[in-house]
Image 1: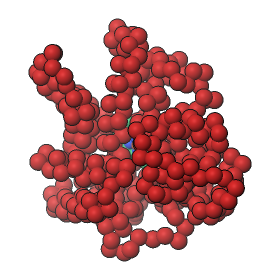
Image 2 (image 1 turned 90 degrees about the vertical axis):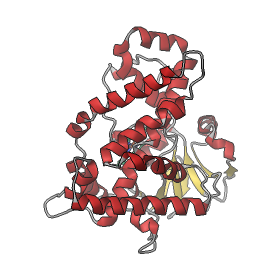
Image 3 (image 1 turned 135 degrees about the vertical axis):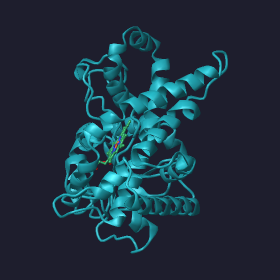
Image 4 (image 1 turned 60 degrees about the horizontal axis):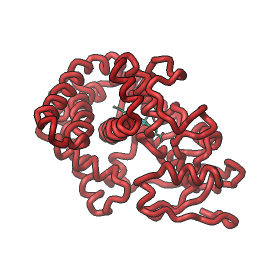
Length: 347
Ligand code: HEM
């Protein structure tokens, strides 16, 4: 990556503790700027609202590094073929196939189970006693989504603790390479074995539905199935952990809004939408890469340069972006789709 006239800022490990203040500062200085990430990668970090929208819609910013292919038979090759790593038309093909299996009706069918799991976790927290402290992450924010996504996929309960460990390593900010390799390998092997078992004996679960999914003559290959399972597990789990934990913190720090919500539960949908915006459970989109040279926010991005788009809200986008309002008129009380709409979600 070559940015001869621009100072490259090195971001420390503390960036992950509070990316938002770094994004706000950079946005004011230079909305598209080169940085060295805590892990050592040099990237263009896009923090301006207009620039972020432009970047997310620009087909020249590819999900794949030009000319890069994983080693065939490597663990990366097994888990790499998912929607977050593909561009059109491959992306549309995968999306059509997953849409055959992962339908709104199937998600709706989960509602009673999710309600029951939530009630049990809340009861368990209450049983710990009103006087004692409860760790929200360990008691609720973590177990709820992992239990739901494992049930959805058809991962047996006994195996779920392994998934927590593998998933935490894979999404951690700077994992040790050997631990990453070991846990990614374990997860891929596990999915391969589970898929083989479901091929023999299909269940009423998403993995079995993905095995059966057809779009005319088309179907998912073995690596695409493992990759899809991996994506759904990780994307559908860590994001929600962050939303619950950071959302609860936001409510506690805004007691007047918390009181309004308690007094009027019909505000819940609007509050969830507002929390998604306000706490930003995902601070950056996944990496993009310039498939050809382009200009963004007045800077020239070279072919092959990696680009990271901040999903933090911009001061330009909203009347009072840094305040949290449980009932925000722009949502009109209506939730947006949450399963996989974020590709079109505004940054
Ligand atoms: C608070 C909850 C969630 C948040 C904040 C969130 C956020 C995001 C974001 C920002 C992206 C786009 C990333 C990019 O293009 O770089 C994305 C994509 C995706 N998410 Fe989520 N997500 C959430 C929940 C879920 C759940 C529950 C699932 C599945 C069970 C899921 C599955 C996916 C999938 C499959 C994609 C890729 C979609 C595509 O490329 O077409 N997400 N999510």
